[in-house]
Length: 523
Image: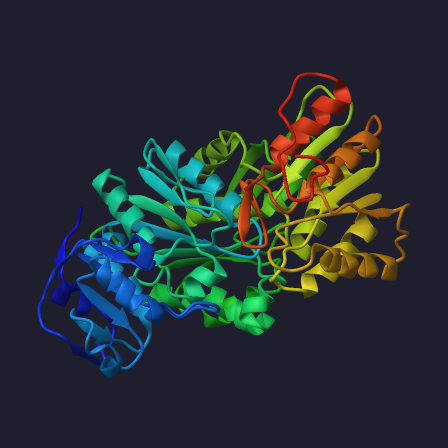
């Protein structure tokens, strides 16, 4: 377990502190954000979020053993807590740097590759990870699905964005201890905007795309785009490292974000595209239910690529990963292509569920309008039959998405099932009513081209039972996730299990039980 004097951690905060009260310089073993998890020797950091003010829990944290506290509220308010209190201007920024300091700044001992974007981040992380493994590089990965450290795979949690700074730095430290030299870090807009990845000393930044998402948090597309851009503007600020400094930005020339990111990035840049006039592009693309086949070309190379992933958008993700490997790390195009071919698939990303049925069944994470569009367009190319889409839209999140996704499905699927997707404390009926209204606006006819089925298991069953030979059923929005939130409670849920349960019932073969949700007809 790491341990540092409080003074060592405080000295790492950019710009220092605003002031302090209390005496002593205790040894810190952990940095905690949840007062309920605080123990002896912990530093408690009081964060202010949308619904919770951590300063309210300072006294309980001290009662449980916190030996110091950091927050943003005035020192005088906490003069009687009995342990040192440090006031900072930006608690999240300070948290990131004291977390890095606690673990001896592990990112400075690694080559750090950040991957951001609205869609395709996790897939691109996995693609690049397999390329680096194939090239013999000792690489780890931190994604929204898990952290991979050598032979260890650690779950990063339910509905998680980029993990909080103490966890990120702990994972990086574990990678250093394991002898790894490179890390691929999935970097979400929340992670960047909330400084969870500050102190990660990025060497390379990769973007997939920047489309409509998270406007409930960022408010405007411009603010959302700016948060993503922090990955690229930070490249020029990375400290000098013993391993050397790449400082490379990998940009998507086909995306609307390209001009903006190209302008704000001050380091070396390369671009990828589905078309020529980029540093790497794709030719002769072939699609099939078995995967993708195309040729990756650059000015002085050509490499055939085969991948088990499905969908045209994954051609772009593959090109992004190859560009990072070839231009950033000097890996040969053929070794990169061979690494791509070794990827077995990405959990919950265009994942086929095959139990012997005479139609295709697919699970995908598509939970944004653009991702749903891409998934449905890819589904259309994979079948000559109908496309049946099952999806919802999360409660307490970007409401504009609800109408947009319903409209996309009416235009690109033959039959749409609108259903639950983490309604949280919002009314599921109200969410579905908004989506149904948008579907009707686009010409959908309820009961004919779209249905409202509040229970997600029921919606998947309905689509599976409706499917005819040659059709394709795709359930979108949950992907790899292992729970669904109703009210404030998380219920065990996996779309893949639900799909297998529905198929088993239709085929009258053994299979898993349909997971229970509050909307289920019977428990």
